[in-house]
Image 1 (cartoon, rainbow, N blue to C red):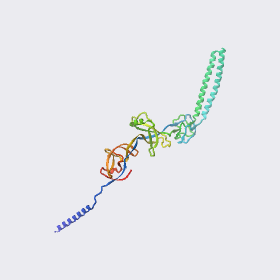
Image 2: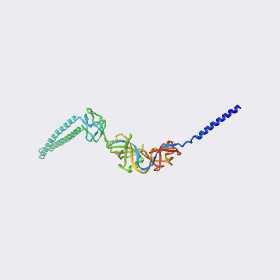
Image 3: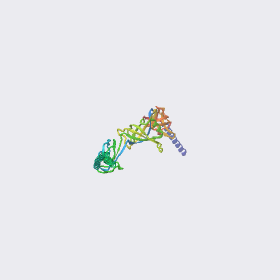
Image 4: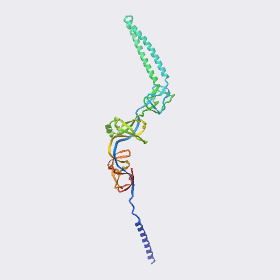
Length: 368
């Protein structure tokens, strides 16, 4: 009797617990569908430049390694290293005294031999009259004529020696051969310099204008040649950031394609009046070949990569999404040019794609 009573109590308690759980389940609300927060942008239609991009390096239009042409003691440096110099500006002065002495000696030799020439010519003229009257033999006359010609040759050699001495003296003043910017001075005043030494006294670079050298794939060569030199605009942007340098023009196409890399070297000339480009600097180069009219563009972050290729999520029905495969034909700055898959006016997801599926509902936070 006691056992039956215990079983009844347990059954009643179980029923009470079940009723409580059932009541709680009825009171619990059905979970709401989770919405994925996303950022979107609207696909635009506009003209987009067709560009070839690459890495280029800045090169001076002209570089001159200044060397001494005569030996001697360097007396003076007429500029500060790293400053701009003008064509014809005095850069270095070498001790002139040994070369002034050599010039004076050459001039003295010339004066002596010119006097001997005048005497030899006078004697030859005098003997010319005597030979006509048979006062002297023809053989004696020929000796005086030969003597005059030899003296004339000696005078010519002396004049050349004077010119050479003047030239050597002029080399003692080293002037800038062009407008440009100087580098480090390798020899200071007081040192001895050698003629045609392997180490230049200073190197001068012309930096206004400058070249930007870069390479493009050989597949682009036909388009480049079709446009012609001087008609292809080129932009250069420093790799550390900053605004693009405008005004560059393609001015050089190499005469052969590099068979190892399949690229061809090009050069663009930039006026560089503000000196934004510096020799040896690496820059990002964009060469505009043509214009793609009425192209569909979306932010580049809207394009995702999958196993089947590139795709975007397009907003449909206000809060739904559709995965669409796309073809990207070009990337310009932060925009992707879409060949097919997206139409102008479509709203695409630019952030939050990692949580999306084709059945997701979205909560648009903001638009780009």
